[in-house]
Length: 232
Image (tube, rainbow, N blue to C red; front, side, top):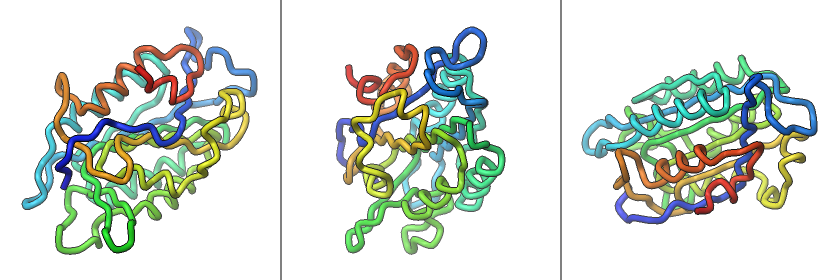
């Protein structure tokens, strides 16, 4: 489903509060978030004729480790998820998260965009090329994430056509400051491609996007805006 190699793109700023030695955000002017909760979904073993993917399993494992060790997130990982699996996982996150929490959602897997409507989708492992009934649309993703009451909600999507997710969010957040992000309810989106395919080819066992994202996590200090995280 993804053929052309493309450089990963940043569509919206990502703000991650770094945990201090005491387990609280290091340099937060406003009230600190009470918890950091992450859900990582790695889909790679697809049904033929949809090709399987090489890197999502390693990607979500390493991102999970970095979130736990560097940022103090409580992480849950699901792999090779069906549509019901994915919906249940996000719904459980919505029930668990509180209004002062910071929530991080990461998806690695196939994506697709309809030529006629421009609608983008995540493809669960039980998805079919004959019908979109088992796919999860950007509208569905936005609705599911909108039910999460967290103060900061961060979505990272490493899939084809994931840039279409940015259209479902507020486009006017690019110039927001770290302090503003932490004071207000915010939904921030980082994706591996615009409205186009991305390659499954990778580096050191990771997708190109995940490799750069992991390097950015390694460099995090304090509260960092996504343009600065991704640059370099």
